[in-house]
Amino acid sequence: MKMKKKITAAKTVRTMAVLSLAATLGLASCKKEGCTDTAANNYDEKAKDDDGSCTYDYITGEITTNTTWSGTVEIKGRVTVVDGVTLTIQPGTVIKAHPGTGASATVLLVARGGMLMANGTANSPIIFTALSDNITSADVAAGNYASPNLSPTTSGLWGGVIVNGKAEGSFSAGTEEQVEGIPTSDPNGLYGGTDNNDNSGSITYVSIRHSGIELDAGNEIQGLTLGAVGSATTVNNIEIVGNNDDGIEFFGGTVDVNNVVIWNVLDDGLDTDKGYSGDITNFFLIGSFGGSPFELDGPEGTPLATGNHTFMNGTVNHTSIVDHLLDVDGGSKTTNVDLSNIYFNSIDNSNNRVADYADWTAGMGGTMSSFQYTFVDSVTNNLKEDTIFMDMPNNITTSVAAGANTVGATNSGFGWTWANEAGQL
Image (tube, rainbow, N blue to C red):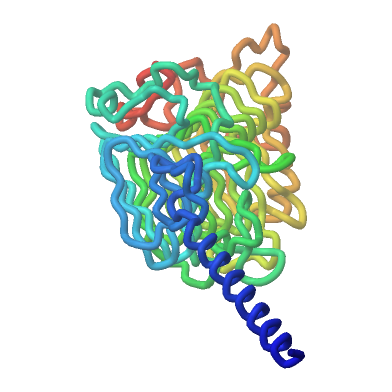
């Protein structure tokens, strides 16, 4: 009897184990697989396990194979063109960015080794804008380039466009840095290297609007950020409309840029940093500026052998400026820059001045020549040339009547811009 009881107990234990395993397997098999993301087109409320089948009306995450965009495209979050991959954007495409702050802010990031081929045309520009903008690719095809519902002063509705390259930069340490706005946990945010002829693609006839959302306190993204972009990259015919930070900022690199419009930004129009050494030609800096039309910073480490960057043939036509008319670093951080053929229109108060000219020239940072300017009302505002252009020799600056300038930008090639359509050029 005792033996029988022992055998019966063992069988009971085994039976319970089998039943328990069967129940566990049964429960597991009852868990339905499917799309569990409520934001997806094919969200399945009955699914318990996500099977990776979710589809969306927008693009998000990393682009890992060569891709082409056309028509109207929505992007959300950090969209990254990774190393070795090319994103091609067809003429007339409208890219609409979803809102989001901090880590969820919408940004198009081109990593080092990635390529952006965004080649619009004078009749079919490419437009990056906010999701709330009602403009469509059909509007662009019809030659209507203005937003139907957003003001050109509207800013901070999404992040912006960042292109990272492998060219040199004069950094405080090393040969590479993490670009502004991208967390250090993402290696795609690194820029810099030793290849000054690096090619990150081609960006032409592109308008970037309503960008510059704050990622964290005091850290916004420019309309277009160029991090150590090399000289084999093509960047021309660019418009930035409404940004919470700068229009375009250069962090090192050797890329040339021409035919640019910066309109209504809450910080600086054109900002150069860390030994940038390309040429910027034929540009309009217009509307209001929360900073300066030019913010020109010097190298942070040892100056590079690539020499000065240049600004040639530009017009500054502003409605208000919070900081300086032109701000260059002097002293130990002397900016490596040459400026020529610049027209400053609508100077309206004594705060609109060139800063640090004496310190800058003492550090042999570069040259300035052929500046023309127009005061709004020198009698009422008590404006004087030696206040606005402090310490600058008289042979550099010339007063002209409004519209009588013989230097500055030419607007014959900007018919595709919202600024031109609005009569701002």
